Length: 165
Image (cartoon, rainbow, N blue to C red; front, side, top):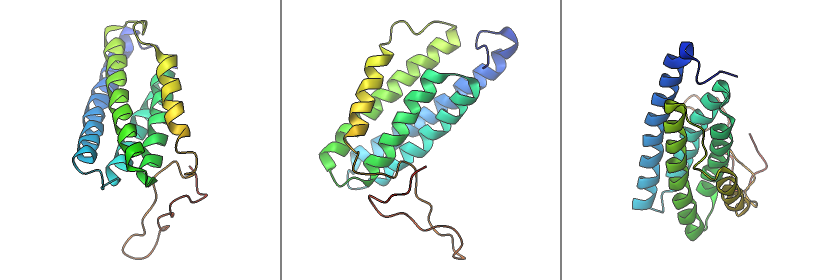
């Protein structure tokens, strides 16, 4: 685990936070696009792909609170994208916007070397778990892989498939 307050790690921590800021903007764009056209659930899958990048970076940096929240956001984004329940997808989008806000506060705290005392992490984690449970009938929790032009690669898994990440 990396000591986020180590002066020698300042540049790496700053790069991590800057990358996360860029990814958060992409995540919000995906959610905005979904809200503009709820019939295009691909935007929820795009959210899942983007939050997965933050999850990986956070795990590498040893920032488990961000990694765990992103893992839940990834699951919700992917599973919501496969759901045919528009109202539930819209609720998911709202909670995923909240996740972006929550992550933004965590990143500010990392930059400033603060503890995350003003956030109720456990309650928000419970909220994400509650929402993820609403999609329990959908088993695929990662993105599907489309075949490429030469026919190599796996085809997209159907809704409710047994394929998992």
